[in-house]
Image (cartoon, rainbow, N blue to C red):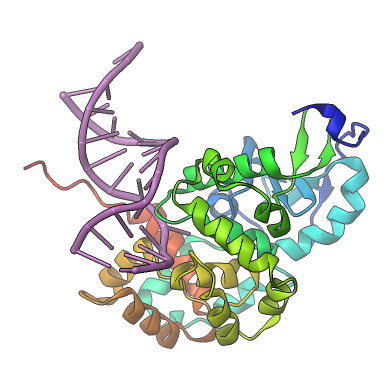
Length: 311
DNA sequence: TGACAGGGGGTGT
DNA sequence: ACACCCCCTGTC
């Protein structure tokens, strides 16, 4: 890969740290859960309580202050755009604290416990197409590995949108770009059998130019039905894409963590994922996806099973 | 310090 | 139910 193929781009410096208004105070563990709990895959801990994240054509650093507030910084020339994009990304203008208060925690002791354990938890609103790509990578993979795949996809196949003295920043390849990448090159990004799903989905989308954007703005049931048409997208991935990439808080993804959590805390022994999903939607209501996020965070932090005794 | 299983935020058949 | 891929992690 030669530099000559890229347009010349002047090196930039980082803007001064600026306060982020309108966020409830956070503690480090909750911020880590938001940025690195499996909702998003392009955030890295940069230093103590400082994170760097990329979405679309944005790169930003966040610094958690002792009082729970956040400061942000971006490459200087991108800073004015970041100022607009960051609040939208961190919750899309929603008051998650008020939303969480409408969940049925008053009659559900376990949910109450989860809400208390992660005050200030939010669901970032990620770009729809990128969310689809990330969760197509997620099947039977842990967060570290998903992050590796996504990083390689960006570095090898995504355009550089900014650079500073230290580094270049790549966006993720668009679906149009993904359609042009040979499947072996995708496999080389550690995708394994997911490479075929991504290639086939890319070809499907390439033949339907406005399909993604239309799907994003459809009501939840119709949007989900359409996502399920894509190769490699099943119930769980579709719900993740709609919850994290389209702000559909009624989506209730059921993965192995949630399945275990619901079985344990709601006595759903023997229930199938589909049955658990139905229970979740009816029990938690129209914001079931937000409840799911709290349950998921709680399970990751407190629910890890001790190893069974050796035979 | 290095090799070796085992299993992993599912989907499709 | 089982194949699909193959990297991380925990263990000896």
